Every structure is written in structure tokens, then in C-alpha cells.
Length: 299
Image (cartoon, rainbow, N blue to C red; front, top):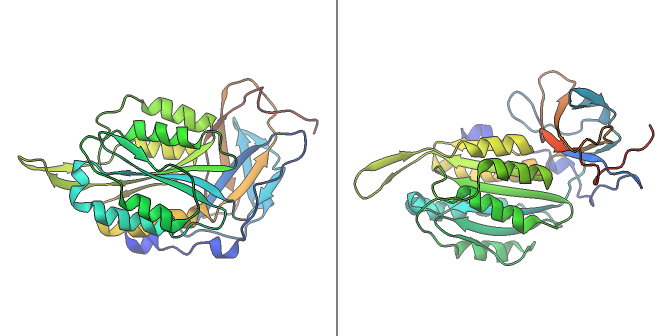
């Protein structure tokens, strides 16, 4: 992925920071945070409610809530610091700083690392200097407990109100987790967490020969399912622009909401489209129509 592609103009400058969406009293809406891009992957601002359509299990739904203001986020940044990253850890941390430096007022974050062990900072904070200092102290080790790290990130976000995001980086496949990809996807869906991920192809010496590693394919699956972006890189030079791009996307998303009409406690497929040609909408692909979570009102 080229730096030119990743340096797309963000829509964030056109948006203002908002409080969490205020939905109608007595009704719980299904909310979707939507990223819209054109054919060149530039972020598109200034769309209107009528520019979108939502389908729940392929049935069109009236959009009863719409907002294009920036929503505060709570994010856990998880970095792979396993042995294959030994020569690039300093560069990775510098790149991740670009994301932390672009946190908005109202945003909070934790930083963590995974290898054969998993560590995460003690508290959510919006203090970027504190977060960068915490990140610089993250240690490295062997093994890649990617899915365990995702599970712990979800644990950290449990009980948090508002927008919840995990940003994960790895350069290899999961080698040591007890947690499965499927359970991570189910939890992220149920707990409405958006997962962004960055995968880097890398080459390293394992003590005997040079090894070429590819990022775990599960990252794309969980990012696609939850509406986050997946970025697969071939060069470490693309790390900083990619972390920057993710910060831009998170502060350039639309919020859409609809009232569910069938509460059957099943997973429902979600589709979001932009009516104009040449534009692509990305949002979470499913939700659980839980009777104990939503209320149906007369339309």
C-alpha cells in the first residue's frame, strides 16, 4: 500500500466534536459508524441522511438518526512485539505515536503489547504524553498471542459507554492463543466494538535462516465484520501513514441509526450503501437482535 494512497484528505477537519448520539427516549436504536470513500479511497464529507440506505437482513430500514459530527472514542492500541519484530519495534512505536498524537479532546486510550505475554496500560486516558510514555515501556518477547490480545482488549472496553475501538498490529500469524478467532468476532459483535487492524509482511532471522512472515488472515475477517479497516503493508515505511489514516477515519465517520423491527435474538446481516455512484460505505456487517436490549415502537 503506497504512502500516496494512505495520505488521502480526511474529512475530519469539516466535522466538529460531538457528545455521544442522543437517541429518542424509550427506543434503543441500532447504531452504525460508517466510513465513506471514493474510488481513490479519499474520505467523503458532507453527505446527508438521504444519501444513505440501510438494510437489515436485506430489508430496507428508515434511517431515524443521522449525524456527521465527530464522536469521542475509547480505543485500545495493541502492538505485536514478538521476536519477528525485534528489528522494527522502535519504528513501530514511532508510527503508533502518530495515531496517539491525533486523539481528539474527549478521546481516551490504553496501549498494550502482545508476544508470549500480554501487557496493557492501567487506565484509559486522553493524555497523549502519558500514552506515548507508556508505549515506550512496552516490552518484547517470543510467540504471538494475537487472539488472546484481542480478547483482553475487549475485556478492557467492557462497561465503557460510547464508541469502542480496538487497533491491533501484527506481522505474523497467531502462534499461542487459547482464544479463537470466532469467539473474538462474536464478542466484538455483541459488545459493538469496531476493530481496526494493520498487518505487515516481514522478514527476519530465526537463528538458522531468514523467514518471511505474513500477517494472520483473521485480522481482515474481524475488521470486515466489525466495520473497521484492514491495512496490509509490505514496507515498514508505510506504518506511520497507516496509523495516521486510521486516526483520520475514526474522526470522519457518519453515525446512522434505525429501529429494529424483529427481535428474534439472532444475528442479523447489516448492509449500508451510499446512493451516489463511485462511493463505498464501510460499517459493521451484523448485529444481534436481542429482545432484552432493544425496544420496538410503533412507526
